[in-house]
Every structure is written in structure tokens, then in C-alpha cells.
Image: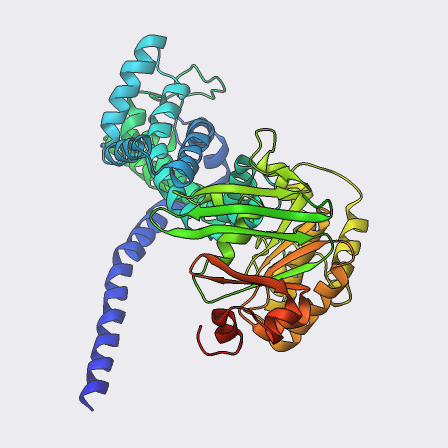
Length: 274
Length: 252
């Protein structure tokens, strides 16, 4: 009897913990949707921002800019992070591996604004202008350490018997790493990449003084570029009610964007086999 | 050296980080015969077969001394590339290990595909699967995941995969230990058929299996080759008392 009561109470407590954990998430979604939904219109996705006092306008350039900057970050960060992770898992039991692992750990603890300052010093000052490239670099630096560590963990999870199977077929070490081990861990790595992308897309601090902002469309990597997060920041701190509403709508767009990216990534990496 | 020995092992010693796994083993395997290796767990059986395709050296801290020759060629001669060697000396493992991300068909030709070799794969897939006695069971679902097969089918898929690269020698490390009696019987039948074209070394814990499939049997104990002779002699008239105790089930 006592055992059953304990069981019942513990199950109840776990359920309660789940509910409590869901409250912030639910209220966040509710707040963003309830404030932001009213401002959404086709124009909001495609138009340039309107000057103060004018109605309408959108965040089209910021959506494109965020995708652009995150795209640059991925192009640089994903190969580096995943490659480093595979190296650590396959050959990392050396002093060099320990050093890389330690560096990645320290780097993943560095606040994003510090990474932004470094990107400012290295990229912005040497190019003498704010640019999408600088923003992408800052985000890439944020992505690499977490990607490397999670890739390492995922690759280590691949059973050694598969590696042996491949080597016993006369497949070379590097092809085995790339085409068997990495391929098998790909589903998990895709999730890690999506988490890193979502995190990067939501960063504001390192973009404030790297990619800055732009009122217009920009397709060039060496020009200041608008991003949703910086746009939200600018709208939110401005003293106009109209801009506050736009900040909410832009926040909703950012949520939708990250959600759409995750969905697309999951669909793309899903196994086609029955 | 007798020309018709496919595999020849001379004074082979092998070590893992601290342990001396094989001690001065010498034996030879004639072409197109089946050698069974028996002995209690940890006696060096697996290490022995893994020296024949140089998989042993992939274990961190592993070391070996002595000579292994395939077709009279020393495997540790400088011009022998272990990757090429493993295409001539195929291996089937204790647990079925098909590639989970590949279809049945792609598993069969994985040895070629992963090496970037193209060819008429449909023909090769059918031929290899027929050789492994799996074709009739999977011919209608070649595109399905390899994991949709049962354990016994997966093991025969792994055999087909090993055969597809056209090896001359097949090493089998307890290939039937995780399988039920029906699947085991199929694999034993398969060994009988493959003998026509291959030289086979099979490690087994199952004495009846060794007696059924092999021409010669080698008994290993604590890293030493205790006795090596024709299967009939080992099981009916062993010279060494330790062999007799083991094959009659008194220890091990």
C-alpha cells in the first residue's frame, strides 16, 4: 500500500514538474503570438521598414539578412565544427585532442558579446566597415565549439562494429570515417546543427557591432546588413508604440523562421529507407 | 613451403596492451579447405583470425611478431597495403553488423561503393545474395533498410557483402553464435558451398559445428596452439590430453 502511494505521489510530482516547465514556454509563445499576430501581413514579410510615423512597412530585408548572416556562419562554422568533432572522436585520444577539447570548452563559455568584440576588432576594423561577413564570422565562432563537442559525442556513439565492418571490406580509414561513421551519426549531427543555427539566429549582441543594421536590401557580404534580432532590438528600445508592435511581430517572424529551418532540416535528414 | 597452402602462419605472437594473446603459433591452411578454430573464451582465437587480415593492428596498443603468409606473400612486407589485403581476405563478424543507413542492396555492394568503384551492381547484388542463400527472401525488397531483416538474414547479408568484393579467403569469427538453429544450418550449408571457391577459417564455440563444417581443426588454449590436425582426428583420436578434455566437454 505504502509503495503504491509513493509511486502515485512521485508520478504526480514529475507531472507537476513538467507542467511548471511548460509554463514559461507556453507563456512565451502566447505573449509573442498575441502581441505579434496583429502586425503580420504579406507586406510585413516582403517590404522594407517604414520610417517613423508612416504606417505599413516590414522586415523583409531583415529576414533575408538573418538568413544571409546565418548562412555565412554555417558555411564557415559547420564544416569546421563537424570536422573537428570527427577528428576528436576518431583521433582525439592524444595531447592535441585534449588541447582542442579544452579550448572548445573554454570557447563555448565565452559570452557572445565578447565574441562580437573580437569579430569587431579582427574583421570590422581591418575591413574598415561593418559587414554581413563580420556578423557571420562572429556567429560561426559561437557555433564551432558546441558543434565540435556534440559531433564528437555523436560519432563516439556509432558502434565500433560498423567501423570494423567497413575496414574489413577494404575501405580506407578516412573513407570509413566519412562515409560510414559520419553517415551513421548524421541524424544526430543534423539536430546539433539545427540547435546551433537556432541559437545563432537568435543572437543579437555579437551582431550589434559587426553586421550593424541596414534600412535597405543588401546582397553584398561586405556591407552592413539588417538582421531580425537587431531590428527587434531597435524597435523595442524606441519610444514609439508603433515600433513596439513591430518588435513583437518581428519576434514572431524570428520564431517562425527558426521553426521552419528546424522542420526543413529534419525532413531533409530523415531516412528514406523503410 | 608447399605451394598449395593458401595461408601459412609461422611463429606468430600477438600482444594487446599488457596481455600476450598468442604464443608462437604455426599452422597452415591448404587452398579450398575449411579450418575450424576451437577453444575456450579468451584463448586467442579471434586475435588469430584478425592477424590474417591485419585487423589486429587497428586495436590501440596491439603488437605482433612472426610471419603470416597468404599465397606465399608476407603480409607485413612493405609493399602490402592492408586496405588491399582486406579486399582479398574478407571477414564476417560474431554479431551481424550491416550498415544501418543503407538499403539491403547498397549493403551488398558497400565494399565497392564506399571505395568509389562503379560497376554493374544489379548483377553483382543478385550473384552475391544467391551465394549467401538470401536472394529468394529479399529479392522483392532490395530497397528496404538492412535493419528490417531478421538476425539470421542480417548475418547472411554480411556474408553476401563480404563475398561481393570477391575475396580469396573468408574469415568467420563465430558467425552463428547469435543465431537460431535454422539460420545456423543455413550458414553451415553455405560454408560447404563456398569451399569450392574460397579458403575459409571459422572460429566457433560449437564443437558440433566445427565437426560438421571443417576439414581441419585447431585447438587453442591460453594463446597457444595445442593441437592441429584433420577434424576427424581431433574429434575421434586427439593426441593431446587437453584437446581430449575440451572436445569431450570436461573443461572449457
